Length: 112
Image (tube, rainbow, N blue to C red; front, side, top):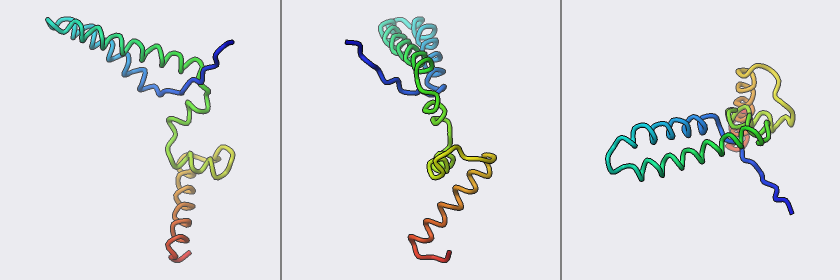
């Protein structure tokens, strides 16, 4: 029986953090006397993080990975329209904010 894994999308900063953490833990911490065990443990941790980011980059669904970097306003506008939002980023954000203020005014009982 083959196991099916669901791969979580990870951001690019996760990969950069793993690379920098691995380099710092191997280059700088190895030079400190008595910190070799900490350096090895951190290098192992950041190495595993890097492998996870490569797996995520290879097998994660593209839509979910792109949604990580989208702002909240664009995601909410896309959910309301049920299709990709059209127009420039500025127009989409302006429309989403306009719709959200209408909803808030209706709930509070203010002017339309």
